Image (cartoon, rainbow, N blue to C red; front, side, top):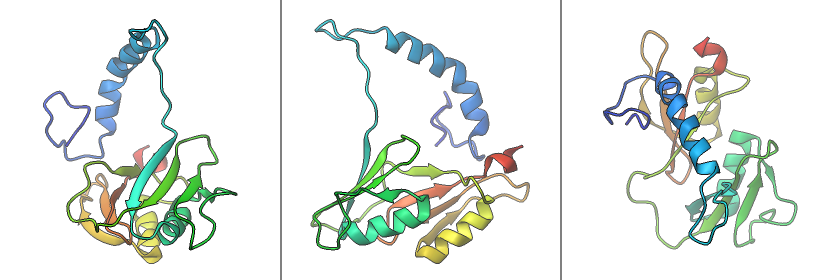
Length: 170
């Protein structure tokens, strides 16, 4: 589904046009939110600190995501298989990835997923690399004209997408 679209229909592309179209609306919303005050009269703002992923084995899943993203292990959290959770730290100041154990297995499609954009490879090269790390193919939305994306799942079944790189969008 095209989240930036006012029609809420899947646009069939990698959404770059959606982001361009929504950039003005987003800028206006951020400007308005920046000056907004809570009921207590304090400025309202948040930062996404962690993206938390429920899983059966935090250490093993963190190893997969570390190899996928290049995020490093937190020096005090998640470095050992017997640790109760695992934390990967983003080197660029972005949100960290926190893996926490849950007793139940994943049974349905994610309600939230990550769209990943390769920085040093093409979408297709990155897809092959990630499949080699242990991901599985869920759906291939690549089109003959080069647009589209690939939906994969990590070793515990959590879906994520690989989009085209910036160079491929050129």
